[in-house]
Length: 180
Image 1 (cartoon, rainbow, N blue to C red):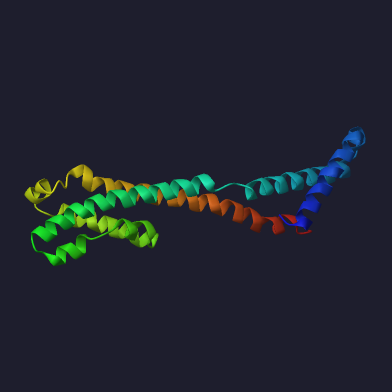
Image 2: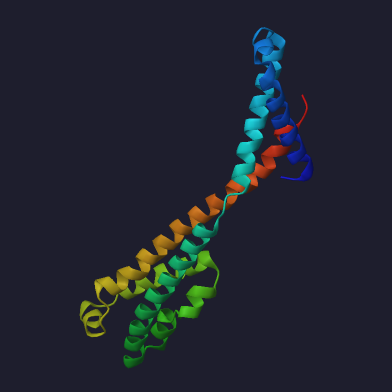
């Protein structure tokens, strides 16, 4: 809220304090009841928007960061084991396809990273069962990056929603304060 918005809120709150001493007079006069009800509704709406604007997004951001870290760590393990197979088999095409580093996943473009993680999981799951067994590409090792990618997307959605609420509250204030 800006200075003018706070001024309107404080004025409405001060009027509310002043009219409390005259509650009997207001209750006996319909136009004053309507005006006071409008003032109370405006003050309440502004207070709600102000409260929403001050919503902290730290928890949502921390959760998203932790989910991305988990996705990067799980992907690093899967990629390292899959690359070991590709190198032992002399398959440089697979080595390139299986290479997805911690840094790539941790610091890249989020949407692309999730897609790359899922693609790695899909390609590794297509390897023959004996290869997966020999290189310890267990179902748990393959599922961990996929689950982490899902958790990261969910945390990203929560963070987006948490950040949207204060912005929407800020955008709604001018509409509330418009005369008319």
